[in-house]
Amino acid sequence: MALKDDLKAKIVERFGVSVDEIKEDTNFVEHLNADSLDVMDFIMDIEQEYDIKIPATEAESLKTFGDLSQYLAEKTGKPLN
Amino acid sequence: MISIDLSGKVALVTGSARGIGKAIALKLNAAGAKVIGIDLDTNGLEKLKEKTKEEIYTCDVSSFTEVEELSKKVFEKYQKVDILVNNAGITRDNLIMRMTPEEWDLVLNVNLRSAFNTVKIFHRSMLRARWGRIINMASVIGLMGNSGQANYAASKGGLIAFTKSIAKEFAKKNVLANCIAPGLIETKMTESLSETTKEEYFKGIPQGKFGQPDDVANIVLFLSSEFSAYLTGQVIHCDGGMIM
Image 1 (cartoon, each protein chain N blue to C red):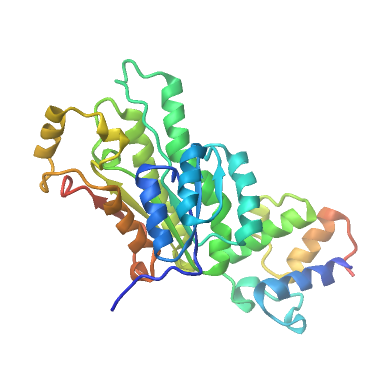
Image 2: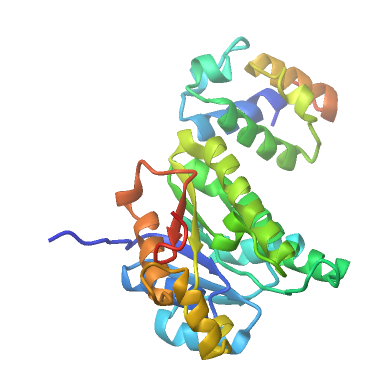
């Protein structure tokens, strides 16, 4: 599965939104009704599932779906689409 | 009639093979919770299981890796932990002049590090469920200090500060963290005291007697229930008025 699709599936499962609602600029806090703890919890799961470490300083800058998918593509080398 | 019903809740109680921990485990069980017993004393746990009919695990909660292993078994069987009671604790009393670094480390690890381990590993399932209760067993000694117990006092004082911090971190998720600070409770720890020493202690306790493990367990029951829904980051004293 392409990275974006995989990530969308995880967001749907975690935040209870439909896949159509997830756009590049979808902000976790503003659009998905998440708070900083929810985002941290989600990112910790992402770390585990993709077997990577995301430093806290970098995690803070991952505010949208686009930010996170781009970051993961760079970090894992997996194709975005 | 008002009653406390914890059916459907999963509680994990450390140090539950005897004393206060056992009373807590039995109390939560009597309220309908599934109570997982944790201790190093396997024999004591076996006796607990005869009553609770739930899983027991021998685990050194001061070891992060052992708690991680424990969590895998717990989540496999129960999928969640709703109520976490950090009760495991030990003493290695000595005047600072004679206290060894090993005595310091052991008490801090068992009494304080253990709470970090269990909270770190179990809190995320509570956050996701938007419901959780963390109850940490402090002590009056953690508030007032005690000659010959610098390690124990530091661990219990640390536990109070730790509890207040996580209470702030988790409050918006309806995961509440509180401490109980028992005074002198009749357990194996106080059994060996001479009558004269006991009389001396009674002078400092307005109620003039030692507490029972059940007195502490009753507060845990309240803190585990919906009746404590607007209470977090607090230290509840259970000491017959010893500290006011």
